[in-house]
Image (cartoon, rainbow, N blue to C red):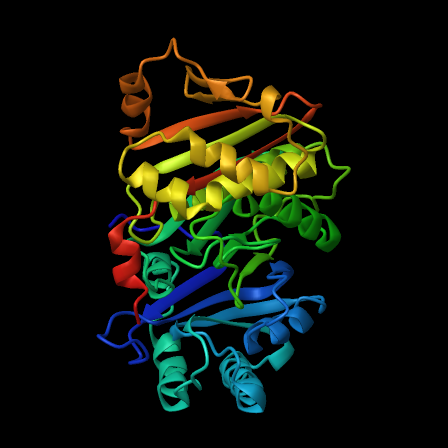
Length: 394
């Protein structure tokens, strides 16, 4: 795998600490040489894992120095022990850097309800520091994986008034994916100098147009977190929302998060197809979103796509039980450019095999027009195969 270049002043590590059954890398560490401005977006699930509750407090501080994470164990629904284990992890990591524990983000992903194996965590922290390197981002991305088939990482570079600025994104996610204000886990690192409020706004907006647009199985995790660190070592003039170069920075961030989000959809547990559901003509954007998500999360639709059958009746059904306003005789459905439904009824001029050809592709778009207003939304999803069941029987 090609080495992923990190922004200036960042180093990373990923190791096997013995947390995952069956082995493999399961702990990662990202460190900034200097205090970094931080921003974060977290799950809105009422049940939040212990590390999420810790990180909600960390992001309020002015500077952060590191992110330490483990896979294979979510440290969720673990009571006071889980809370203590997060604090212990932060304290141990902070001691290695000679900083305060509230400068350390802690993240976990994996099975809910089991205490962290703290002997492995403690030993893993020591080993992580031994392996820190600006060249080890790919190891960190690999350590983030659970049921993911491949690590997800991207780096891009832009120029801000003659200063090269680098942005790196790492993400994991394959199942339990329908976030609301976050995704499974994603870390954004940049050497840009960015004002804290501006970074927070950028991260939230970019998340809303990327990770919040995807669904694999309609299940929101207890651990969803997106964390950004900006350490300013690129030497650019401080970026604010009023800066001339702000749009360049924000659009670059947004594109990166969208690409990472689409990697998650493509890597959905057992998935073989990426399906885009685009709804227009709704009474509002919110209602368009309701309709799109109902179609995208329908198991009947997802299994029909797995079987390469269009079965538009299932789409009509999902639209109907969504919370969107719907008038049956106004609904139009089109598979790519092939009309399937007009005015709520089959469009008989389109041969069935033309629709089958569309859903036989690895990626396709279903266009839905409710013909009631100007609301629109898009959701990215995947099909559901027998492999999804096999992965999730435990």
